[in-house]
Length: 279
Image 1 (tube, one colour):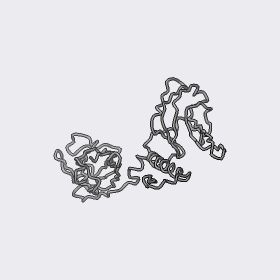
Image 2 (image 1 turned 135 degrees about the vertical axis):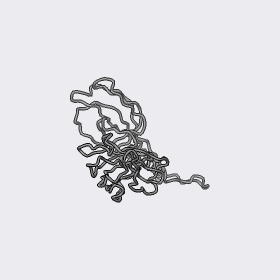
Image 3 (image 1 turned 90 degrees about the vertical axis):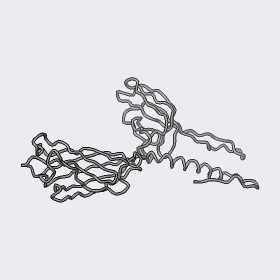
Image 4 (image 1 turned 90 degrees about the horizontal axis):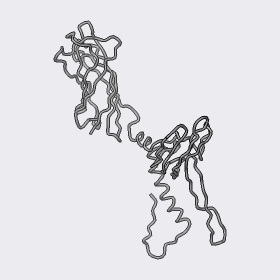
């Protein structure tokens, strides 16, 4: 991050170059922080800009700040009407320039600003650097969330012995660091389901262990859904198998409470998708 040490004695040589350096120091850091929320191509709200739609075609937005085209822009709150029947509310950005009198008598435009507000324009008006539909505004944080969760799924291959049901399949998992959660999904098929423990003492079977960093701080539980087209009864003939209980313990072991089906069924499968808190 840019900085200047003003404490040195001897008379600091203040020049336009040094002032430009100071301006870059805060604009660069502001843009870097704003980029947490997205890449700036899609406009998003930094603060304020609470939008309400009190009646058809009428829109009100409060003061605030937005980030668009890699610039932080102040939004001036406004109310508009007529945004229906071929018209729609837009955010319009108006640049301004102020001239200063220099020592040589010249008056160049050197003080620049931009301000955004609401305006009703014909539906389909082209988006550019000076305007975009109000509906395009997004809340800050979409980019932050995407940047702080794993983009690719990791996999855990399941393959148990025939004595343990002959279960096969793949478990997919990835972490959201912002929410400190784990997303699990997968499909498991038991080819030797008659080898599961008989009711009512059906047991939990280990499907595999997730790597360190994906273990919850507390035992977590979820359900897997039976998904084959025709339902099957449990081996006691008491109930249809619709769900089986699953768990993820502190050691990262993923276990499934497989239920033995009726004697005519050799195998069945389940699928699941669950989000588990890691703290």
